[in-house]
Image: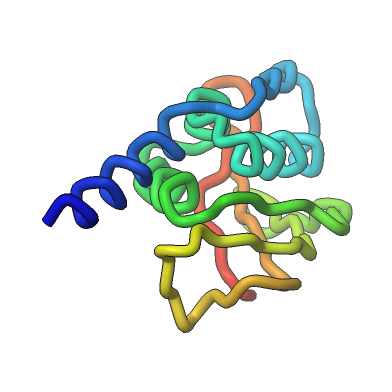
Length: 132
């Protein structure tokens, strides 16, 4: 039982204690700059910045990334591609997970990913993400 509490507590600590702070980009930042900052914030476990760059509906996903990963480094961030009322930004990143994380759908290593951003509250925010 103590091990379960320690692991759960460790996950909470990783999600709530930033390794370093990432500045929130200015309101005039482009979608690709927002994605770069978001990924740096996830890597740093800077939940305040990561959540500030997410729409309200996307914040639970952001929380899951913060809880489940020990780091993620953006390898490539592509230019934004318009899509209806938003834009897609494709990325390649290197994922590192906590030793207690076991997600067969997202193994450690290189992944190709796409973020969907919308312009809300006077800035670009991440609304969705996934493999395509």
